Length: 429
Picture 1 (cartoon, rainbow, N blue to C red):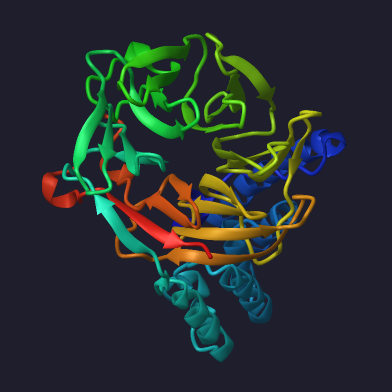
Picture 2 (cartoon, rainbow, N blue to C red):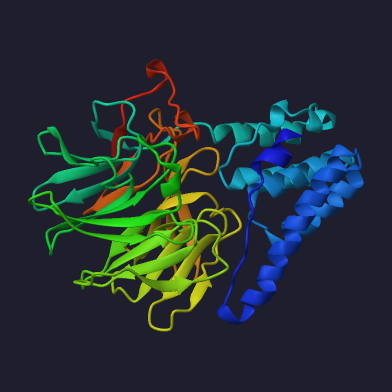
């Protein structure tokens, strides 16, 4: 059962600050149950497998892989209706699992209700959305993670992890190198943002084997680069050398303060406008893999996407961290880029199948996702979409970072497997 072993993701459900301890214990227990269920499956103890999986899914009710494993458990213990019920829950999320070709469901293959849910699951592979081609870059081996935009000059900026560069793209489509690492000036470029008011470009950079001229001694260094957007000169570097860090994304408030997410230490840092140092803002054991962050319009709240544990709201006055409740037909796992737009969150979700861009409509308190919709899924250009940028009512985003083609040993796939990096755009209105 390859799916049970390879797809499962660790999930923590956090409600309010007072409940965090209990929920942390639930997380630990659910992970134990997941491992236990796999061992029982491999031992052909299907009733035990089902029992352990059910206990785990009760703690992580929106986890698609656990839902799928529960459906398998019911199929293997001759409970077809219950199996189909859980497959329909996955189909409600508009996610795809290849149940129709999974031999664990052989007892259901002639069941008409099973055939119907397989059709629903397969429909999740159909293209949805109206994203359009915006522009592309001429070099294939960039490993593009991020895009930023300057409305004043109508210029886009695209960061390359592999080549340790930032490119500018004019409104006429002219591509130039904005910044390039010379020797060890900076690492691979992750999240980037334009501070129009202060004429700055900010970049998260990290040191990974996927970048050129990688030095293992630099692994774990967290670094933020502050550029003058006009002269292209580096104004300052903010670096943390101790510990294990990877600054993946950042956002800027109305004061020009920069907030940075760290996917390894799972902290959020701040660089105050005019400061020469980077400071710890929030530390929480409940984060597992922090990704995109963004502010509410009034800058009172910071939203964060954790790849493994979902959506959070952070009250910047009290510094309390709250999970955002989601409906049963949505999973908030596998979220990378995250953007606040008109009382909703735009999320780039590359950790589920199909990879997609979704819009999650929030309650006035921001505590709940009330409804959601798919903005784009199964686009022909998609190959691990990552980060984006809002410009008015339009959303521009990296369609094909091509992460799987850049290996941990530093090797890159052959040129005929690589594609030109593409930035797509979609109207949100």
